[in-house]
Image 1 (cartoon, helix red, strand yellow):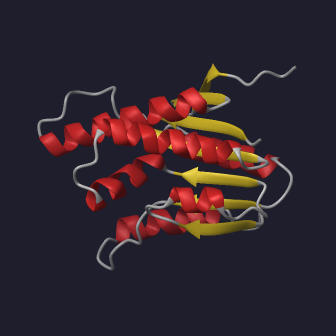
Image 2 (cartoon, helix red, strand yellow):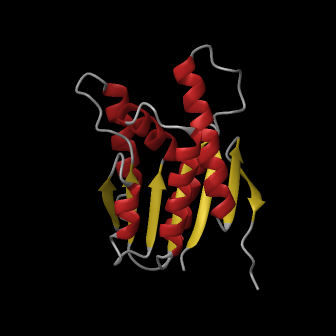
Length: 182
C-alpha cells in the first residue's frame, strides 16, 4: 500500500519544491505527473514556468507523464514506478471544469476518493500538490466560486485519505497530519 502525501498552500509557498525534494529522497523510479495543459504559443510566461519546472528535475532521473484529466489512468498504470508526484490538483480541477461544466462538489469528492483508493493500491509513494484557494475573499462570479468550492472539496477528500498533510506558508512546512512512525 502506497504512502500518500498531500502538500498544500498558497501560490509560491514552497510546496512544489518540497514535494520534489521528498520524491528525490525516496529510492526507486519516479515520475512527475504534470496536469498543466501545454501553454499556447503566445503565453510566454507559462512556457517559461514549464521550462523552469523541467529544469528543476534535470539530473534526478525523472520520468514525466503529462495528464490533464485522467489521473485515474496514471494511478492504475505505471506500476513500475515507485514514486508519483502529481503537480497539481488545482490545475487538474480547472481542466475538469472545462471538460465537465456541470461537475458537482459531490462528484468531485467521489472522484478524489477514487484517487485515494487507487493510490492505496499502488506500492511506493504518491505525492499530491494542491493550492489552498479558500483563504481569500469570496469570488465575485459563479465560475470562480465553483472553482474555489471544488478545490476545497478535493483538498478535503485527499487530505482525509492521505497519510501526511503538509501546509506551506512563506516557504515553511507546517505538518497538519503525520503518518504513524511505529
